[in-house]
Image 1 (tube, rainbow over the protein chains, first blue to last red):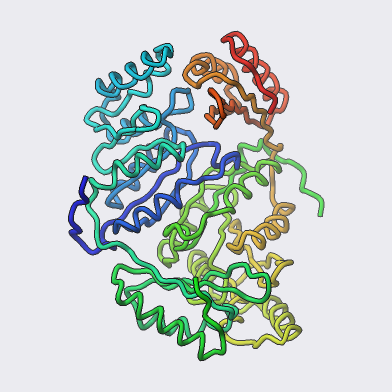
Image 2: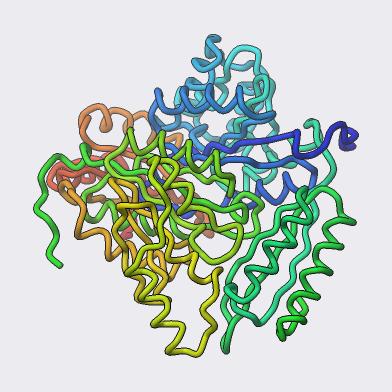
Length: 257
Length: 257
């Protein structure tokens, strides 16, 4: 599917991600979905402005969905769409939109087809994975069939990273987006405290860009990544050149990154 | 330092984590702090109920701190306390509490001492790391000296994982806490859809526990982790025994985990 044409300044198209699951808040599971979605959204020109990690608690899920869907262009959720009792995302999103939870006929058909082909028992727990809010459209799952869905601007995806990633690719072509967000990184051997003042001045010069400073690990001495991000790639390049000059003026060395 | 005595049911002592930094929302940096803090809080009997990832934007930081500090026992933040222009956590927390930002005399002393010993120039950017809200107490940093701080129930830590971890250990003994949250995991070779109905009944039997089902990766066939968590370790064990029996009744095999 071709991407829709960029229609607005990318800063105007915003997204939030809700990571749903007790396992993320107990430390059992290390999230891998936030950074992936963040990168893919940036590449297509959508700005991820917030992520929340919340437990499998109905009132919390409903309140978080309703708060964020009014505030950003697109809300994504991951987790809570499997067959077990702790998978409650579909019913919570239905309640958030104040619509009935239905058994989606096409989702049910896909699941039964999949189970029967594999000789897997079709039971009520498995069919729960066909439940969606009334009016929702399906998001195909090329890995394990059980679909995600979207309703209005809320996109409900699986928590398993491999499945989440194919769902992201299903969704992205449908979204309104701005210019891709580009970045340039200048890695140098100066400590942050040495570049800080000059870097602030460069940030003040390029008000449409976001400039960040991230200390990294070097075996010997300092290593700092100075990262410029923005929708205007020429400005991003110009700011990176200014940062490179600053590093050299201060007696530092710019490393290839 | 000895831990304070458990004083309440651990579910009553709650925490939220605010992860501050554009790099987390661009996908440049993969967070490693949430799962660590989650585990350490669980071990000492504090329940992490929410985490938020937010950008380096003043109004967002202030609003998030003020919303969460009223709702949970303890708020933790990571990120934004370095020397560069994008490090704005200290001034935002001061504004959230409506108190002046000061240069903390003890923090300044520690920093100057550290820089002079190493022959590092003492400049205004570096001294910004001594800024705290008025009335804040310092959190020692055994790695790179620049301290965190706390004011009321808000604990401000570094974003660099190594530094964040030593700050967590500085903070934990000071916190009120409940009984440690214990967990038991039953790993089995049945698909989630097969155990789902029986697992739901076990969850209904143990209403004080949280039971989760997490499909994992096995080279051949299914592998699902069924995880019981709660403050009452005897109940946790009893529920795990029930889950093991369920798996065997359904013809599955319980793996050692």
